[in-house]
Image 1 (cartoon, helix red, strand yellow):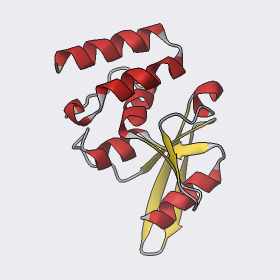
Image 2 (cartoon, rainbow, N blue to C red):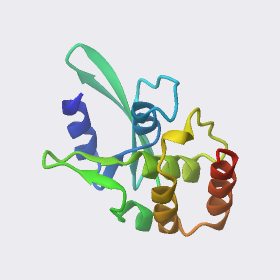
Image 3 (tube, one colour):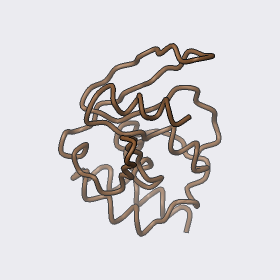
Length: 136
């Protein structure tokens, strides 16, 4: 729903659509999440009355230097900013260490490794290498 995406990106700036929303859309996870999941400079959950339904927008706080790095972020003229599946995968692993991924084979491993230095996190590097090596 483009209107909700646009609204979600305007509530707190800077922010971008990521984690479960992107992973679900790209087939990395199969579980259904009804909320719009965002990455931002703060953690908040907002209920929005949208025509025909109530929508939850969940913002997750990430380090500011990670948030401001636009590698792997697709920016549309309408103001929608969305993580690539590879960036959403890394955001998710960074924020939720034990998250379960159903199908990481759809990810471009070269892009994952290209984006990994953004996070400057040794334990994230180890988790990523372990997960990706399982699927070789």
